[in-house]
Amino acid sequence: MTRASWRVSLLAVCLIYLFVAGACSFKKQYRENGHKYQDISNPKLRKKLAKEGKYLVTVASCGSCHGDDPGDPNSPLSGGRVVTDNGRKLVASNITSDLNTGIGNWSVGEIVRALKASISQGGKKIASGPHLGYSGLSSADLRAIAVYLKSTTAVENDLAENSIQTGKQLLVGSLFPSKVTSKGYTTTPPETRRGEYLANSVSNCKACHTPEERMLGSDKAFSGLDESLLDSVQRLPGAREDFSFPVKGPNVRLKNSQVWDKDSLLKFLSSGAVPGGSVVAKVWCPWPYFANFTAKDKNLLADYLLSLEP
Image (cartoon, one colour):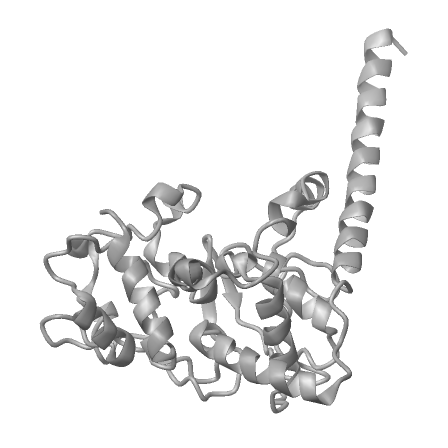
């Protein structure tokens, strides 16, 4: 064997070793991180966290993907809706407390990990886009959401588990774990930044209102699509069910807007009504979920969007 052949063989062995070691490190890392959050044994604390978590799950519009009826905030989160994730078609999973077909046997930590990094109980990457904003949720809010989800009424709905993980993603994820684990707040942000937090992390407005090519550029977040490119059928009652979801919505960088002011934005958050009288189709924009924001949170969210330069 020539010296060049030896070098090629040695390089191949090294790459295989790196891949296998990376894969093991990746799964070990997420297995450990999945248990950082202990399950709650104190019933009073569990009840308190579940109440906080229910509010967050509602205004985060988890049901717009996972709900049996995506337009109804009171619908069980039993999954089944087909959603688009960076060109892939995924089926939203059952996240009720059912032990066999839901997440009833997941730990609090494993649910937190799924929210923060889109990693399943078994360590698989299950999505890339839909949960992106939730990676910025505070540790306290993540725990509250997980506790609430474990308290929901179990609904049996057996769905295939999504998996988008490739060998390349596995290796990159193991070599650069901070890309998916270091985001987010340890504590919930102060009121001065709560509007920003609600828009970016809780309600995940970026998922619909930021074109995919701009998702990494914070200067253009929420810039949406030009109104002339939006098909009105996506925004009116009776929208067809065969459009890809989530849709890309309009620009919501609203400072100095000639159309939107504080009152009209608050009205939209409560009723889905846009200036001019039309009502956005609730199967495409989760305004029925946003209607459950407290008055204070609606005002803070509206103030934040109205502060964004076009």
